[in-house]
Length: 228
Image 1: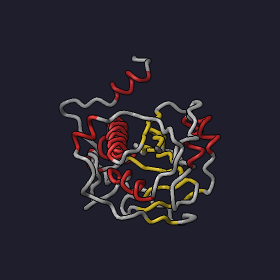
Image 2 (image 1 turned 90 degrees about the vertical axis):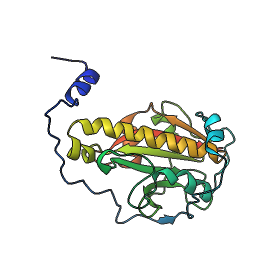
Image 3 (image 1 turned 60 degrees about the vertical axis):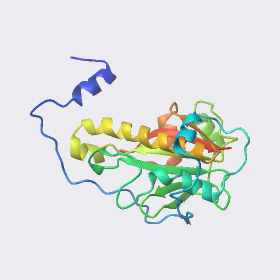
């Protein structure tokens, strides 16, 4: 019996000829019924900006260095890959289960109160969950990676049960892949806007979950530091 947890995960989530998938009804996306505030975002700009391959040539993770704020329009465009358009989002999702959630920790975003927000992709809105940004606590949670020069943190979380309902244990693979797709597109959007974005994959899971107030069954995937 395989004892290595990583190898065991891949063995248990393999598909073989003749296997049947659960294909249960897709769980609904999360909606916060009573947020502290609702922050509307500017309309998305589907056109404009530098050509794609010019952006790709400059694509690389970069920590914010200036410590300046970002605008609400910048934030709106950064969230473009996560927004729902005609029932779909800007990244692939097996079975359209979308096991991904997004939270914003606003530190210095023009026109936005500091605090923790949940992003609602269907309406392209932010729902404020807490008025505390807690930059010091985030530095501890991120293994000492200080967010002091970041304008915001974008945290992508996983709800693997949404994919598991359709694909069984293999759905956990899909949830991890989806976080990678979405994070890559956010980094691409940041470069196109002339902003800095840095994905922090190493963190204390329970600390991040506590700072966001995550329920059981929802797990931190990646924390992206955004700024200039």
